[in-house]
Length: 125
Image (cartoon, rainbow, N blue to C red; front, side, top):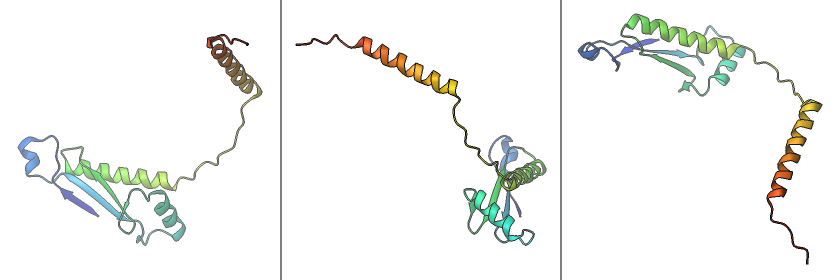
């Protein structure tokens, strides 16, 4: 559902009289066009952006044109949904190479030697 409201920003006196800011809301939880698995995935991945009972809200006010803001809001909504539905890559655990382990140990040794050289000489009694 689109809703046009007055927006701040550029426009001078024109901005006080025109409703160019677009607020686009989509009820993800109650959308009949989604099957349950897709709905669950969207609700889980977009939970930080949802308001109320699974309602996604996108606002666009960058342009002085209501039409351009409407297009921008729809593009943002499309991008959000597309990203949320994209399957996540499986993480493959990796381990450091033998050379990387050796470099890390050599660096630790150099650091320890440097710190040891900074210490005052011990006086054995």
